Length: 323
Image (cartoon, rainbow, N blue to C red):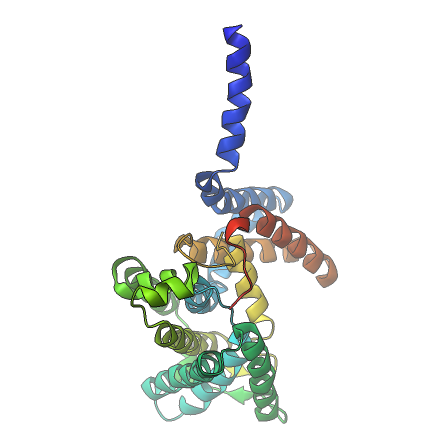
C-alpha cells in the first residue's frame, strides 16, 4: 500500500518540478546545450572547430550589445522594433565621421542611436502610445533614411577604422557593456525601478518610481547601445549598404525569447537571457547554414523553435498587452 502511495506521489512531484519557475529558468541553458550537441552531430563536428568557433564569435559581438539594450526595454514590458534601422543609420554616421576621427565616429554613432531612442521614448511616454506602434512607425521612417543615403553606392569607412578589426577590441567592448549593464541591473535602483515598472506600472508609480522618466531613459539607453554596436559593425564590415541591420530586430527578439526572457517583462527576467539567447540563435543560424538548408526552410525551423520556447516560458498569469 505504501509503495502504491509513493509511486503516485513521485509523478506528482515530477509534474510540479516541470511546471516550476526553477525548471523554466533552466530551459534556456538546456536548449543551448541541446542545440549545440544536435548541430555538432549533424555537421559531423565541424561547428566546433576552432575556425568555425571564431566565425561564430565574430557574429555575436554587435548583436549581443544591441540585445543588452533591448533586454532593458523588454524588462519594462515594452518592445522596440527599430534596432535594425538604428544600426543602419548609426553605421552610416560612424562611417562618414571615421574619416575625421575615430573617437568622433564612436560618439556620433552613440548619439545617433540615443536620438532615435529619445524619439521613440518621447512619443511612447508623452502620447501614451504602445511601444510596438511607435517603433514600427519609426522603423520604417529610419529605414527609409538609410535607403536614401545608400541609394547610389555603399557608404565606405576609413582605412583607420577598418584596421581596428581585432577580436580583442570587439571582445573588450562587448564584455564592458555586459559588465556595466549587469551591475546596473543587479545592484542599483535603476534596475529595480525597471523591473518594478515591468511588473506593474501603476503599483510602481504609487511606490515612488517616476515611471515616465524610467521608460524614456531606457529607450534612450537602448538606442545609444545600438549606436555603439554600429561602431563594432562598421569595424567588421568596412562599408554600409541599404541592407545594413536588415531583420536585426527580429533576430534580437528571437534571441532574447530563446534565452528565456518573458515577453511580459517584470521581475522574472534574468540577465543571462542576453548571453544564452544570443549564443543559441547564432549556433542555430550557423548550423542551419552549414547543413545547406534554403532560407525558407531555415525560417520555418527557427519559427517552430521560437514558438516552442514562447509556449514553454511565457508566464500566463502575468500575460498582458505589451506597453
